[in-house]
Image 1 (tube, rainbow, N blue to C red):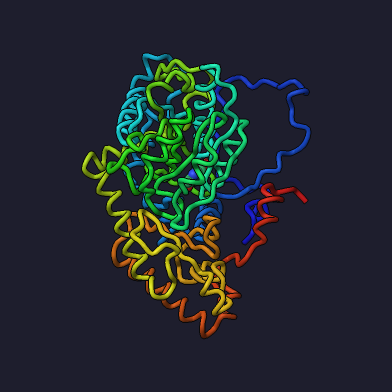
Image 2 (cartoon, rainbow, N blue to C red):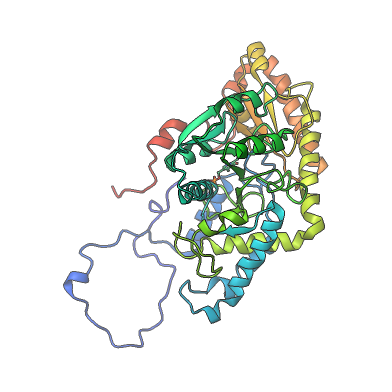
Length: 467
Ligand SMILES: *Cc1c(COP(=O)(O)O)cnc(C)c1O
């Protein structure tokens, strides 16, 4: 497919400017462009077709099943977009006087109240633009808390080996030494390993529960008690709250602060790097360290982002919460858990779960035995799923499971979709024994097959250069 620049035809236009109705002024030479601006020249149909063709080349949650574990690719109700498009929200200026931003303030305050109730926290900021940014903000609250008490000996943050990669990265960014602890054989925190590293040098623990293998850690109260006993604080990675929202509260599990990805659980479209929001909640005693906010009048120190963060993401999250209501929120969580267990059991007997027990909103398949038998890897299966119209699950994560495929069907999928997905998995399982070569070469029907992912990450070419 040609780039939009390559489709350009000199002199073609898609805009007509109105006649100038003010006196023309000649700009100083210093402000004048020295060469032509190399913008593509196309008519409106060309532009429209170009972008429509581009979006037909990607797989989104609006095209088909998208069971990307840990990322909650659920359907985003269209009413959220309608609300986020209201001129009162889109045309507001961040420096507008208080009297004209009362509506926005009410959106923030209501969303904060609901999310505090869901998470069991007392204060909230919406400034962070993503989950990782929320983690950074939350761990800085922990740091500020210790420093404010003159307790500067706490230099370590404990992170289990099953954690999302952003957790150790965050702890390091905040200037802490990362202490990794190995998981117990059931994928949960190993209490003895935890006890062994606890001490007066520990600032806190970062944890997600249910953890990244989709299992709820039943020792959670003991874990948070142990950390508190040694003077540390507990950080909850609530990027994905789909299994627990409205059912159990991280605050009641003993956590002191949390971030929630509004762009996952609370239904803002994500992927491709669109705007997000990593709302950070904290207990009363940490509220004074929250970032400064003009609208919410929190007494903070610093800001972590200009103005109030990605406001329209909060509008979408609030719309979603108000649509579901107090009964709908736990119902969505319960259905997410039901769907994950249903799909796991329908696939079982071919690909086997890494942990054969009731899962929460997601589960991990362990393909290491299957690979030994067939030579077909988790990557080959993932690539083969693309040919069947399904987005691949998360691969090779968490690191504690080898040849991992991590599936999160979400609550918005019907039984028929899950049955079809299970059938596809069972088909591919059989195919691996009869035609492994075909799977090594998959995908066969996609625009791009197997890009060099390391090169794409290390050396991305994102800009068109004029020849
Ligand atoms: C997605 C995710 C994050 C990071 O969120 P971003 O918005 O991508 O920065 C952190 N932890 C977990 C468990 C996640 O699933």
